[in-house]
Length: 182
Image (cartoon, rainbow, N blue to C red; front, side, top):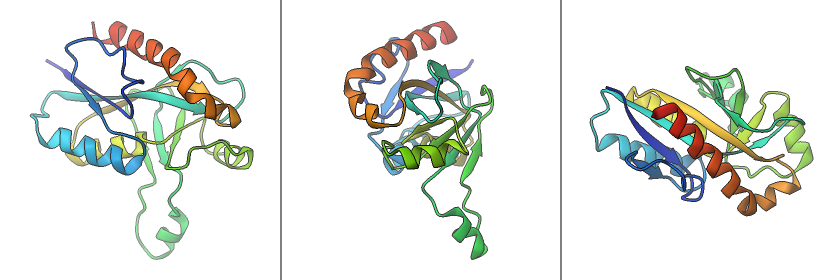
């Protein structure tokens, strides 16, 4: 029987997770997400576990709204070309099973700058700050992960209104979890 664990950056994003599903709050950023996810996985039997990384996301392209299940997460703020140039694999892209074909850029940059947004939009549809860290930790433990992201803003100056938008996103994420898991 499949067991689920929800991983989210903030309590606000996980506010409507149905009762009975374990919730892990990581805090903001890839490092916190990777460390806290790894700690949570290290402390439990992971044989039948699936991690659901829920949260808000910024739309990098105009017209994107609603809920997405990304198929790929890209660590966008690593200097991957330089790492490759010295003969190492930066593992900047992780494929996610069961996704909808969208690409999520994940990094420690809170994107509000139109130049940064345009550059990221060349490679991805959406942006967040934790999914890569969660997916990387899950990969290390051999645990399947699904990314479930709701667009809260357009990764521009409207992103600064995130605190006002998180409630609406949290409700949609909770509804998805109820429909998917029950």
